[in-house]
Length: 387
Ligand SMILES: Cc1ncc(COP(=O)(O)O)c(C=O)c1O
Image (tube, rainbow, N blue to C red; front, side):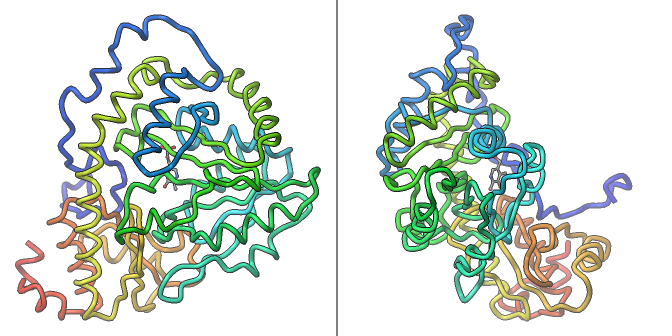
């Protein structure tokens, strides 16, 4: 359809740099700072850049020492470093389901096995602890959480985190399990107060924990390639883990010097982009909820993140539905099975889409299921919405 020049409303757009935000033209000027002409590699990154990341955590009310911060080229890079640190080939990592599809590749590329545990929906998403316990084995080395999760938008609660930490801490030292929390979307609340109410691993003292973040989501700059790991837990265990992680990081030295030199200014200036993204994902989520309210489709409650989940009538396989929506209605969505939803039918839509196109795309989806109530509610005639 693209090759034929047919218009498509792309509700899968997840690249913030292509979503029509107003990036200041000189936003990346700090990357040209002449200080970056000097190469002075440090395994965990320069102390100035790590201090800048620590200051950024203060903005979220979290007190993290720069000594416990490790810079990475991206969150994917951070995962790979941590899998090397925590697991031998054939060891296992527990990952949430539904969640981010990249975990299969990220684990396989480090020869690590992956075992899912379930998130269940009862008006809000919660961890099904019976599935966590079933997934644990002698070879489990880490439990991964994504908070807020992609695509469910659920934050891990403080209670859930305590229960996970108890499971990890119940193991003997030789079989220890760490917590890895992907918090890349933590700046984007869809429910006010959700982020502050969530459980945060960076304040844990009882179990070796790693929180992951990065510029790619927090200031909408994935191309700069700067992420970080914040380590927490019992001091002696954290110190031993960081000593080993230092060797791994020193082997790759994957973070560019210009990105480190620019880190403080990018974090500060990028706030302007973050504010725009936060405004848009909030508006689109509210649109999704209100447009679908009077339809046979249900918007699943989300507390944060960049995605919306629509449960839709299960009239045909998701794959066929998504193709039909594209060909017949001109809307591109992701099927739930990409994210391992337990059953069909779900559509995942990106809340990053510009507002007018988002509302148009959602109306087309609802109309596909003959949910004309949404158009009546918004006062837009179906044909106008289509145009
Ligand atoms: C949950 C989650 N973690 C990490 C990433 C990627 O982050 P990075 O660009 O820092 O590798 C994404 C990208 O969509 C994501 O959804």
